[in-house]
Length: 182
Image 1 (cartoon, rainbow, N blue to C red):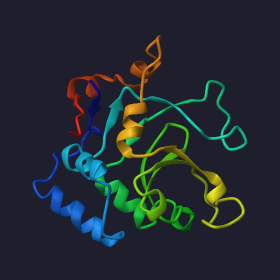
Image 2: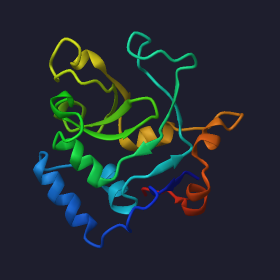
Image 3: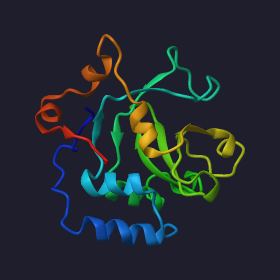
Image 4: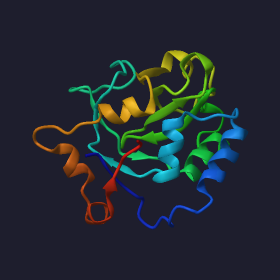
């Protein structure tokens, strides 16, 4: 069973979380994928386990010997909202996407809101160049999975439990709960 632990020091999920998500969705095009809405409603981000995935980014963008990366953190609604407002990456944010998580090395997980690939999870190596420029455009994002659920389902751990070792701080182990979107 997949686990998720909240960020340390985060307040409990507000009673009006579903309304907050609906308000946010209205501001970014009116609709979020159902699986991602369920995730934000129940867990509001956190640290998942298992947490290793086989990344699809080419070496020219990000060198990785084993093509493995960590899903270090999935952002809370508050953090997703900050990214959507451009408060963190400014004009570098890829258009038509929400920034929903990250690995420890600057690889950002994007959730598509575009009609042609709505709900797909993409990878973007964060940089500060304006979106649409030569150094930051469609050629710099890579489809990782068809949906948020498919992304979560693709997470695993290695035989030597490197993912668990990365994830398992005392706080996380003590506060982890089963992650179930059904």
